Length: 459
DNA sequence: CTGGGGAGGGGGCCC
DNA sequence: TGGGCCCCCTCCCCA
Image (tube, rainbow, N blue to C red; front, side, top):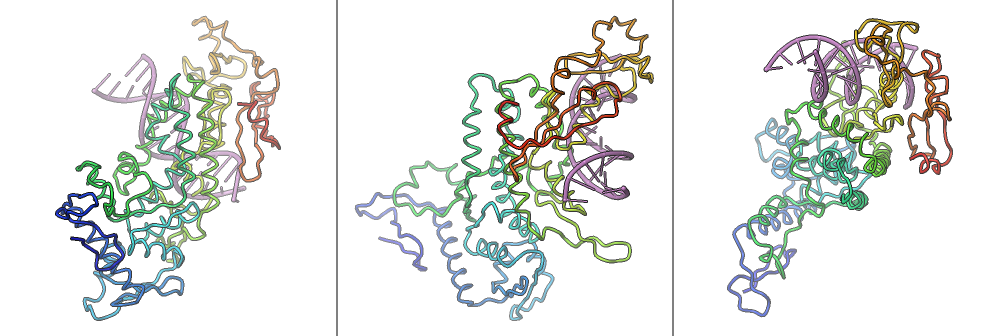
């Protein structure tokens, strides 16, 4: 007996009792359920395209989309709220209008609602996620995030940080980097409402059951995100942003200093991450703002919403700065200790505190000192001040630095290199020779290096 | 175990 | 728009 979907769009399959020549497969109720859902969705999509039984008009920047209110209700928290607050009369047509995303983006969302196929690529993922956030479609948000994460490979930073930075000889680092490039080249994602069901089936049943002519529902072609990342990415997870940072990053930093072999490869990954972040910045949609805040004079205040979290900022530049905490981008490395920072001011503060001993405070007795009675003590790349009394008491005299160690005498202490991907130049921060002398007045000098050839030698 | 200080990270906002 | 400053928060270390 051959069973054929009535819509004619599904692949034929055979029942368990069919004694035909094709391999016999056992069909479970879950299989049937998935097939039925798939067929039903296709039917609804056909009805939408033929504008049959459409009872909802969605106006997006002047363009009208016809849809079924029950489908929208079941797919979007926004429509759920809208339709439940609206008329209970099922005969009355319902309209909704949007100006916060483009018709193209809503078409992608609507196609997903009716087909389970999400047409994501690197240039639309931010806008799709922003729209999905507006429409409260958490599944779409999650998979957009998964797409972005695979694009940036920031999961490597968050999930595998410890293992990753502790790599010694037989590390899978190379594999990891290849995986980063492979995943970031992936541009199209399809996902299905049955994805979770399918995953569950795979867990519960042997793979052989779905081989051969099995009518597999269109599953997720992108690797499903790690459970931990999905868990972490849930909106309103209750875990504060600051809480989620913290010890792991700090630990990674300390290891960064000690694991030189890992450091080189890490820089490659970070460089790749920076490049991908730049691509995302370049593709930031023109409309990412939400009007939800009002000034004192009751005029609406436009703010930019982060597509990764609920944070909003007034300026696009602030959003770009904020996005670094999601992308893991750290474009400001300290060449003295290889620690990387998200902002130049943090790098400067770190350098002055750790490597220059700019603070006029005795580290031991905490008393304020002057340039005269406070001497700079050097321990490795770290410098701090001690008063004359503490120096005599502690016997630190052999550690006192005259501010002219080897690195500084040569060609200035290189503070960091940032690759400028847009114009293929490097921006290099160097410390002048005199800069390490206390309060010389000179500060960070910014040099622009034309070619990236310097980079290899620098690293 | 607890409190204080150092260091780092992020937001708001001014220039 | 970027740089920079100020402020606050969190984490870690140490006494």
